[in-house]
Image (cartoon, rainbow, N blue to C red; front, side, top):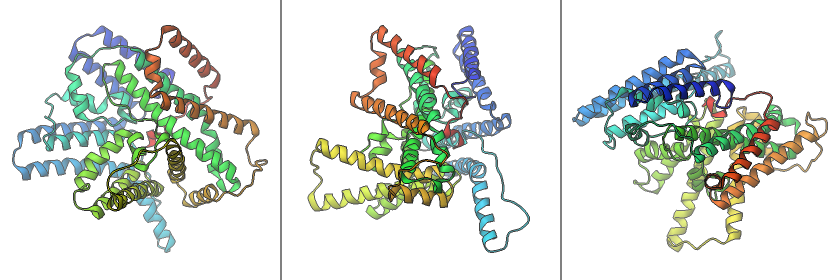
Length: 479
């Protein structure tokens, strides 16, 4: 059930009617929980059993951790929970990958049997709700959070439909305390603009841009560096607009029901360093990896070399989290190398010149931003291409420009290229304006009514003209 379909609109209206009919706090929680389970079952009803199992498991483990005082038993409870959760995630998400890898290796040495590699259906959203429930048990174990005794509250925290299938990853310490307040329905201006912004990113930009990189990356050997460059930039815009669009809609809907959660993106294409990029891109995942993986591995507490290794391991695992393909590991490894390189440069500079940093000039900021985005574009290539030969082809043509500008007879037409370029330029213009004004939506929410009505009318006209012929699922549904 996609946010921007008629099916979801009907679902949402029916849900609001039930909430208006029942004003009690418990009743509204129960309505939201049942609605969330229905929302999840829309893709595959059988996988609700997996969601319920994960929910019951960590609800019980949380209660046991709250009662148990012996350190050894507490560690065993936490290890049991994490092992089960990661075991389920590993099987459903990575069994097919390791099976294909083993099958291909056996084929290469002539030992392949009559059986094909496993094909395991991936439950939508499993990566997101697994990380959410794991963060709860870890926080209870660390005594940073008291276990909730309300199964209804815990189940709603795990399954709440706005963020269930593609995030953001919400911490229990942020969400559970808000369930103690009365659940309300309120369409404030900022929530409306978040939803509208998310819809525009997804429908107007991401879905309309996707056809070009899809065509080029289907057979990149046929295309010149010009087409490769446009396709890579188009995918960078597509992945951002698609994923941040989902996050915006999810956070806006959460706000409609009275829940406040942090934004998941902060204009990442204005990052000036690798660490700055990860402070802006998929913030809920980067903070999760820092709090529950990098720091437990030792962080920077055991010397520089160990911190570099911890950082590299964190990003490799973060890459693998994104999908069952070794190219995601390459993507994570590239970001790991970038972060380690930045850390090494900082440590060497501090040792030679001290910790004091000079203020950056405007020219320096622009050059650093452009250089960082060039590197980010390179990292998107293994993220998008899961065939190693195609990935190498695209990398070669992207990095080593061939100066061939002939695009005729390659399955593209001039109108398609012009449309893609115009959409990219429109995105860059709005992205830049939002960066310079420190938040376009906040300003619109405070603007006079006339301005708000004008923006909504313009958005409605744009949706009417540019709405794609086919609805495309959000990219991160596959993760």
